[in-house]
Image (tube, rainbow, N blue to C red; front, top):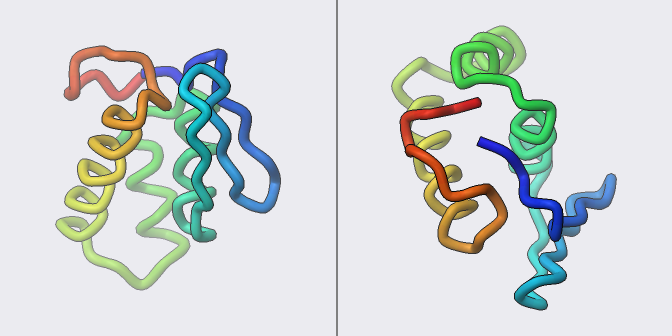
Length: 87
């Protein structure tokens, strides 16, 4: 999975899609996740980092990641690929 070329992400969490004109504000966790996705980290690496950094359980991380992934795909922020392909 990759962030599409039309997407611009600021350091404070502002996301702009130049293809659709849509813009979004991410909270700090969303910004952290999208930066890790942009760095092409796979789900396992992201999961391990989140478990080490935050007081959260494995199931919550997985659910939140899948929900976030679905939002990114819906808003055309990530390339349309297999939802199980986290690279």
